Image (tube, rainbow, N blue to C red; front, side, top):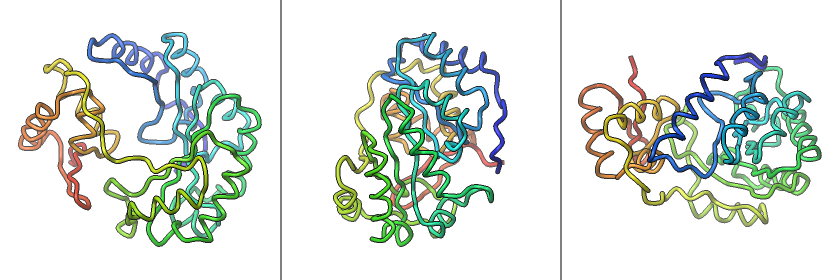
Length: 269
């Protein structure tokens, strides 16, 4: 874990890869989102990257962030270049924050919330607040009431509630029921919404020759279900299903069961 910003990748390589993807006939995105296996604001080149993407395409740019570095003026300055910022806030109390997020020792939830509110005052774009609810941890009334008070001060365009729907890092992290999510959305007030886990149908079919490689790239970032892969790559469900079975048998990717779903992940050596 670190809170020190650094330059992990070449900005040119990232932009070149985005340009290559945009050139695919099967690629018709509505937005470009910066996320990944890590915290985007740790990238010291984030502001430059956003600028270069916006020079490359008319598509809006979004950033997913855990919000931990919003207390830094330079981070807020970098994020201000995005069209949409989706910070996470899963807890307000110190105990629950430490339990769920397991932060770097230097991070304090009070300072994170202050940075989030500072960003709200400075940022002209849209903020969509994301809250991950874990059964028996932050879905209890006191913590939800504390979250509601922050939401009222932050005034995000949307509040999106989610729960544990991928294999968790800790076995005690259990999902909240759909019924409970609905009740908590009402408790948080407008504009809280439950993010649907039901996926929309896939759009178009990518070229077969590179679909397997794109699947490997996708599941190396995070575990994904068959439906999520089909949607994310714009590929036919049946085509992806057949290819996943073949890739699993060949040992190119792994498959794990969590709750009632099967998730595909990068190969564990």
